[in-house]
Image (cartoon, rainbow, N blue to C red):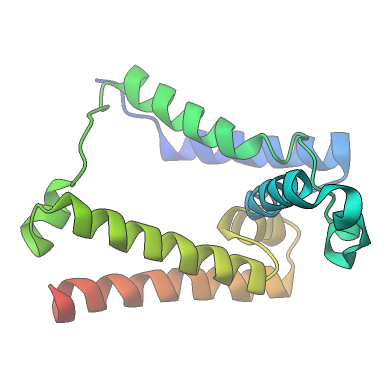
Length: 167
């Protein structure tokens, strides 16, 4: 089993961000892809009237390289786990099962709720962990440093509450 080095992966992500700025003058982030997806769905339902919405003039709903980051993350994570020999299919991870039980429905409900909160928070913060935590901190953006700090603080606090209070 070959485990990926976090140092090499970090350097490669840094190089990827540099290429992103060099080739497109845009940061890497994935929360915008979800906004674009919502816009594409809305475009199917409402037609060209969505172009009247100011939000979509700033972030046009289209399939571009930023949109393709989300499928790329999923495919890349899958390939990485297969190539490293760590892939396994499980609905309920062992740590979750030992703390909250092995009910897949509860796990899915909590994962869905967490995803919704993450989506709301990332749009409220003007970006996600990859946008702020990677691209923004690389530019030494104060708002990104503050956002990334609170992403981690919020994640740690949530984990502590879930494991020590709820579990």
